Image 1 (tube, rainbow, N blue to C red):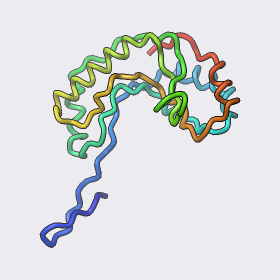
Image 2 (image 1 turned 180 degrees about the horizontal axis):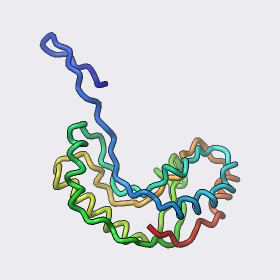
Image 3 (image 1 turned 90 degrees about the vertical axis):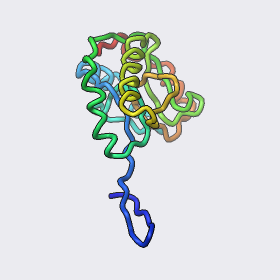
Image 4 (image 1 turned 90 degrees about the horizontal axis):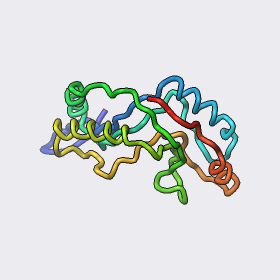
Length: 171
């Protein structure tokens, strides 16, 4: 694939950029616990739920990268030590761009210092590999996407607000 580029009488195919993000997969215990907890909300209209096998904690959104840069990315990350297990506490709902006008519904944690440290370590490794990368430089917001929002009514919003998310989560 690629986008055709015309020039000097030739048709050149440039590789399509690849949207890249780095994440930590969920442990199976937490995946099962969260999925089971969310079962009671799956009847809410206006939400397209993420399948549990896709649950992950996003560490960095890197933007659109040329394929040749993506292939080099593992080199930047292989020198990093695997993170020690950590716990995240006090889960709550969040949304992009906001809870008042949600498009993406996610879970995030009030006490996410270990996640912030891991995210910054990963971002530094990416910057060392490609300083001019299109990485999102906004402040880190650790999250686990659970649904895409297609429209929530007031009743659905109230149910979400009153729903108790699973407590302490080990990673």
